[in-house]
Length: 279
Image (cartoon, rainbow, N blue to C red; front, side, top):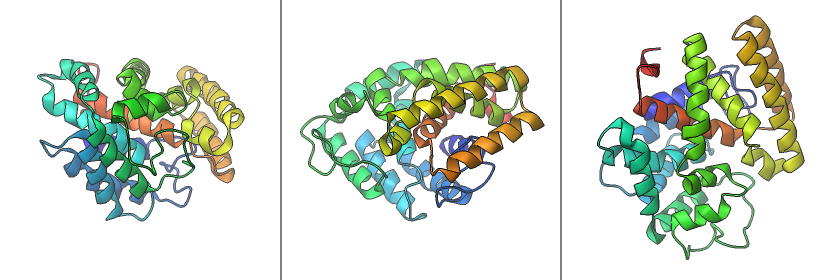
């Protein structure tokens, strides 16, 4: 399911990312597919803690690609993978995830910091507290809670992945119910994240004003997609915005990571309305 979620996310028509429309930001679709193949078995190993999974998945990624393709995905998937092993049934995944997050300790932070440094994400800079260049003095959960105000991935640790369960899954369900096409449902979820939560990677690199402008455009296209549905006209709009974002070197990567996590949760918690793996 990990590899499936990564594959569907990267192949969906998501403006600004490496996607079904082709390469971008010096990366190819194949880089993400190879990365997905590398991390799936590592994240699925029983017994490993969240920090161990993060570091091991980054190391596995570095063996197949030379750039940071999936750090955000790794940070989101690692606690989900651990919670999956502990949940008694799909319906209790969120409860198990809450337990996993509450149990995070300084050792998880130390290993996660190592993984983040190894991945070398763009635009990180230095932080006045809990800087990843230094040894952590707090648990991984506490570090994420501190960063949650401006980082949407840290926000998921702080909220128990609230945006995934309460924003991503409903939009994915809505799109799949409308069109019975997982890639277009994925596009709707992506646009919903991008419209609702100004992308933290965009904000980190270009500032709050640009992030807000991208969110406003995403909101417009999201509403049009809901009304018009997939088709030539919508695909033309998505392609045009995709080209414009890439021309300006804007990559809403955090929104893509949240979308991938939504796909994984959807696959893990399949109901009669969520038969994604059969799509």
